[in-house]
Length: 184
Image (cartoon, rainbow, N blue to C red):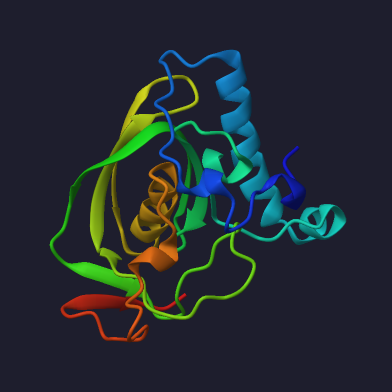
């Protein structure tokens, strides 16, 4: 089981590396890693389990965050309508996106960043993501709103990009033109 001790923190060189593609079909080891990423995210959202194991609540986790340089992410988040998006993916990639942007009004956080970093993180309002599920089956997802933001955040980890890299350094709360603000 992954705990907070397994999650590498900001400043670790692994967070700036580009992760390797996972060979398909996935190996037993890769399947176990992907399952453990999802297990962490789900357990961290359960108040009893997260308290018992001292897990910081999260809605997504990427393999590089546990110092595994492979293209794997797990996301477990509900959208604005309460619909659950629970996906563990190998080799996810954004294949198309909207011109329109969006951002979380409260900013973004990250399990690898211990302190809050204020500012708006511009993201695409809508994305189409392709990847492979735990069985190696091709998946295509059309996402918007919070769910699209979470997937972009996790896929950034696979490319060595941190959320705060997107924040305007001179004016962190600069209004992003023609962007949809999302409350969370």
